[in-house]
Image (cartoon, rainbow, N blue to C red; front, side, top):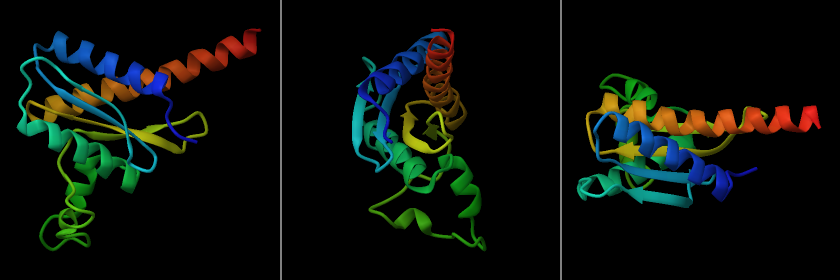
Length: 146
């Protein structure tokens, strides 16, 4: 199963709200489980150089089913995945990319955010991913209560 456009739009809306709350300008990318672009938003004034970074963070998280920063920890000199960032046409191995899980716990897509510090990128990405997860939980409750 892949992320739907509605879920992707939910993630982008939540990420934009979190970015605005933190007074940040972000590029936000949502990809499906195959790392294909589903939705993208560049907030007015967000860095142009971060467009590509947000896309690569999302793809990295989708391809490896893990946060981009977690892959970065495994790819340090001497690590088993050292230099992996040079594969797949270039990966981003610092925080800001997070897999998005479906109701069954499997990866249905990923969000990538860039435009600030990696800590802020991760916080904004998490807000977007969490919104999809919360939306799935609400949907389940509605079906159960019907």
